[in-house]
Length: 130
Length: 389
Image 1 (tube, helix red, strand yellow):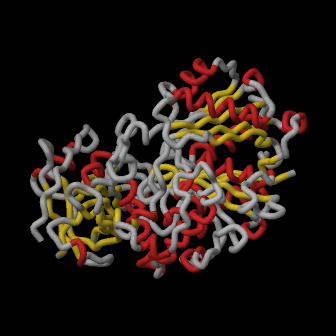
Image 2 (cartoon, chains in turn orange, purple):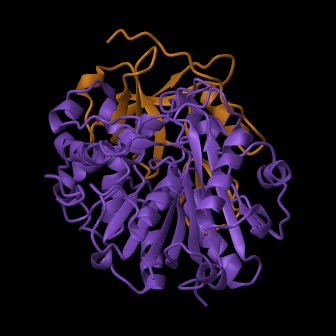
Image 3 (cartoon, helix red, strand yellow):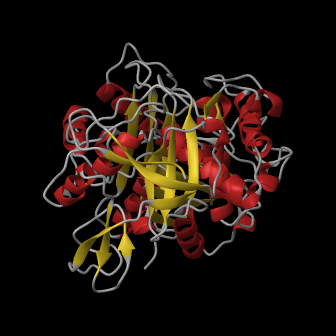
């Protein structure tokens, strides 16, 4: 369980994504909803990647999902588990699985949101077994 | 309008170096260009179109046209990572069909080994950050683990095994033993692959391609140029290209853009996978080959594991001889971009110039397929089908 924490490079917010990172500082994961076509998408864009409408709005995710796929990077100074997690709301996002025994992970497993600090930037959304 | 029969591959060259401490990047591009022109029986002054990708120094075609002293009327620097050069072959054929150029030169080169790059295990950022970088870079999406996720999902959905994936490396190694330039010349077994150290689950060290310096070049020319030359004629029959990404979060790792680029190429060429005698399939990892073989239609989706097992990719043994130079898995992966060498070995096969131990008899129709970028996040697929005339 007690893994050495990997140092995380800080993400760089821009005008399009500032709200996402401001929410992250408050422990909230935002995804985008399109008012025109009703689709949710990730990673968040100003323009909907499905219908190209500019009528997109932020929605807060409940932070629950399942593991779509993962891979444990053994050849790193601190091994880590990259993953795609499918949120209850629908979109699948790239993330890391943290605070867990990597050898017991499996596809389909339920996971919940945690935020991890970065080096001098906003925290980033990651997941841990629920 | 179609490119089918409108252009020919008349020159190929694979640089023999695999570690280029004593050469510059521009020099490797130019030496490769020189080799391909000599192979074709053409000279530098015949070239009026030039194609290169992100591996070229500076502003690609501008830097290299100046370095090589080329007088050009058509330039293209489309960059889709390792599949760029297969796209270039198609774009060159298009430009030739439209009369925009007659002799197109495509070059690739890189020296990741000389520069000590850890290319598959450390994140790389190219140019201006992509809009996904802020959301993904901290996740550590290095090459090996993004392909690892594709393999994990394939195993989960279809029951594919590590042993089946290992057969792909085994087949490549059987071919590489005859290639004096190959980085890995030893024949390996399924056991050796699955017992090699785990890099990123479920991919072992021997599921990964090698890292090499080097380069290569291709000359595509108009039919009347091809007819004037003494080399065997390799006609371009069809091509396709397609990007595939995360689709706004509707991610599906079980298939690649080869589903689209392959279908387009087969349609244009008016042939089917059953007609193909030899296949060059991009092999950054064993899983890359498996997914592409399915998507190109050589077998049903999900049945790739059974298809590649038991030596089915070994020339003279199996149904689909692939990467008879040893591919990126054993021979060469110059600049971490394996698309150009895929075309080169397919042309050797069509000319009957592959190593006699791996030459496919009566090889009259071949496919070269590439994946650039990262299969599990954003990649560019490109396919070209060629025929010996």
